[in-house]
Length: 215
Length: 215
Image (cartoon, rainbow over all chains, first blue to last red; front, side, top):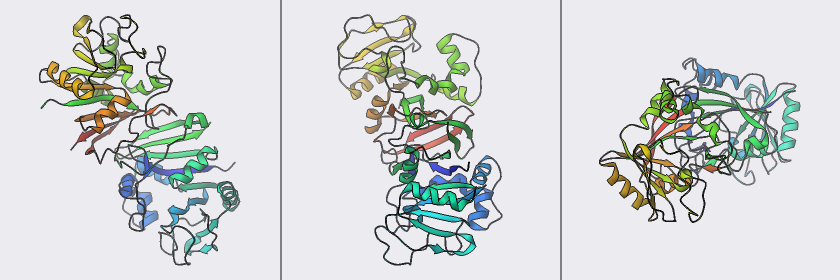
């Protein structure tokens, strides 16, 4: 069966998946960008995000590339989609990624506030789901047509899916930075009790890569 | 000036420095022993703890060996010394390590309950300090005669010293295991705000080694 996968989700040495005080200038919270040094250096991210032919091959790139393989749909928490809070004031905000977002597949955005689907260039359509995480997963699975669904975050959404044991596989990278505060990915989440184990551990000079698999 | 150092302190992927439910059969809490796979494989630990000539050289061994260099005294929390809680019922408990403990220098054990010093074989004397962490540090520094003091843990004692910015340098290893519950080393501790930064990041196949230094 198609999987629900987390890919290239990076936490700090002190366990934070994002810095504090996310806003339009700090989409990953203050200091959050420093988490992604390993990914930004890769060929995969340079090409997919910036259209550049620079970037390096190697362990980091292998893990970054995994994240784009066999993905038929994405699920995002609302804060991953933008800094707007509360009811949508208008249709102005169209995501962090410009008119041709990096997804190129249907993306299901979890929100408490309804909004019409947003068709972007390049195959990405943002669907706004107000019926909760199970409904979003069902719709994403259907849209993925047999491919896997990638769960993009943020931390709160990942925790909700984890506690329901809905995630099949998580690639987590631990970056050599300290954030000090923000949202802890594993706060209040007992992974072994939920049936997860670390099945891959592959360090690179820029990050420690893990795959946690539901047994 | 001589330093207060943490060495070879291992945490799990989910941030725990010990498993839950420490007792005489589980000195590191349930599951806690699995944290130390990297250290147990090293030449340094095989020799110092088990008198064996087996064990491997390499990155893990380099970090394990650091922990025994230039150490003139240790500080331990009481739970590191033993499973006894509350007032000492008698003098029976003499540590986890037999009559010739691994320290070979004065060891200052933090406790709320006074007890006479315990002179062991091989140069180790356990002193029981009831006047708090600063007093223990002052006494350990004096006993160390210019060498560094090593802080052995556990988690609660490390947090107390961290929050007072008394630790100069911490070698932390992240082991590829999940504990799920227990004591989180960095719980409620904002390391950057306290002035700590990650100054070394060196992964091995068995652990990710970090050095956090007070700036």
